[in-house]
Length: 140
Image (cartoon, rainbow, N blue to C red; front, side, top):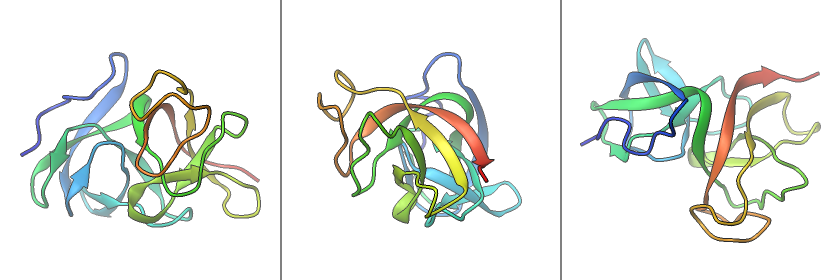
């Protein structure tokens, strides 16, 4: 069961939605129905925010950061500190944004080093890194 804002970072703006699938900390989500969110699956998905509760099963309430600081779940593609802008990928993870892959930027990774997930200046699959939600900005 979701525990409200257990992993929320002070100063973030969060809203409560209903989980339309199993969700975990740091996943990017999209709307599947009115008031219901599911994990993003691709860079073209319309990003809503980032899961900040510890977890939620389908049908449970879940806290989603829609603006501000959050923990982002990194995908299989490393995110180096030199390329901190990210977009959504499979399973609600985040991967580096590139101009050729998507025009939608979801967040900016700002935490490297002494963050959840390790102390390197890049990421590995499954790492949680501090990020700033940018809100699905479309970049031409």
